[in-house]
Length: 255
Image (tube, rainbow, N blue to C red):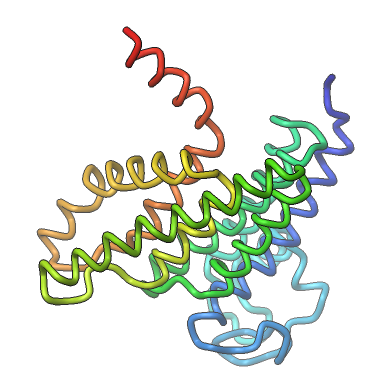
């Protein structure tokens, strides 16, 4: 049954507003600042931003990407994050209709986007994303009944256990921390949304993407890999195409 365009538009608007809040999280969480106080302000001149200049996407375009107070550039991160979140929420409704699956996909996508941008910029995955996401994932599993709750809990345990085990082994082999605690908690959160099979797919896909796109750069520039970015990409792949990938793999095994 086709989804009404009004519903898709409303979902996109909700996503844009959440994207605006996600920008606040990306900027403030790594600094340990409150998400509610002080109110939004220009990071250059500290001028408070009125509501009329804080409309997702539109305000940045109207202001031509510059602060009205000091004239300094406003990072393009703000409208891009808002637009990406709006598209994710609208796309989730288009793909799965008005359903629990659509809500789960939109929420997970929003969290993964926040993790990706924050980890890429600060090499940090705040607990507010992972622990908060874990709670939401379990709650959505509970909304799906007993089976959904058990799948979410099992996925969280497997996600945490695998990454924790790898971290311990890596620390023993290399005699130093091989993986941040944020990655471990992130996989518990992913498991709550995707289940234990989704955890395995996320780790495989994230590792493959990391090897292909970032390891050459890491070797050349001697920089650490913000692995949360690639785990987020793997989790997105698992949520959208996981069932098709599992079916293909089983077919492959059976010849």
